[in-house]
View 1 (cartoon, rainbow, N blue to C red):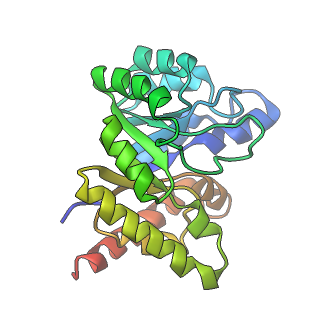
View 2: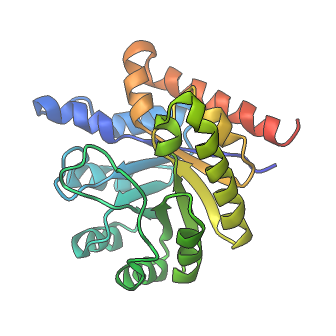
Amino acid sequence: MNKLRLGVNIDHVATIRNARGGRHPDPLRAAFLAVQAGADSITAHLREDRRHISDSDIDALADRLTVPLNLEMAATPEMLDIALRHRPHACCLVPEKREEVTTEGGLDVAGQYNYLQPFVRQLNEAGIRVSLFIDPDHKQLEATASIGAPVAEIHTGAYCDEIESKQQKELARIADAVKFGHSLGIEMHAGHGLSFETVSDIAVLPEIRELNIGHFLVGEAIFVGFEEAIKRMRNLMDEARLKGYGV
């Protein structure tokens, strides 16, 4: 049975810090706590406007983390230079609009194939595991495989945000997509908007190898603490994975 990995996104620890300025709370400390609580990797999104994670945060994470760093970033020359300088374990290419509150959808890999191809190629050549953040769509998965990205992260936001009566339709789309992507030889990940209430139905899908979760965990930490929130998420994921394998 493949263990389902948990990547903890610490962006919104930096959001709280930046609301007042100064150094607290420190995203690096949050990363260390996440690892203690069961995180397998740390995810950080260095946005073009630096609204939460900063360049110095990436410097500290790259220097001091003892688990893989997954750098989320837009496909821009500036971000490519930063990734090639730090050589994180992984880079997840995501769409980015300055005015958006959070990432609103997946990359259009099929439509931006020629633009994205050199980014994927250079990251691959540098030994960085490339992931493309996409909607659960066969056309986008086929483009991901063709462009040479070894990993696709399925955007689960629509599933998490739908009213209960429509969630099953979105869940079916995700389940179909991860099976299709797996058949193409892509390593399948998922993330965005996952909570205690929504994670189990995603974690039970055996083709998914990794979940990336952040905003909910940082919010839940206000009530129960960061480590406790991550431990509960880890337990829910593990229980669902065992269920998926009929254990």
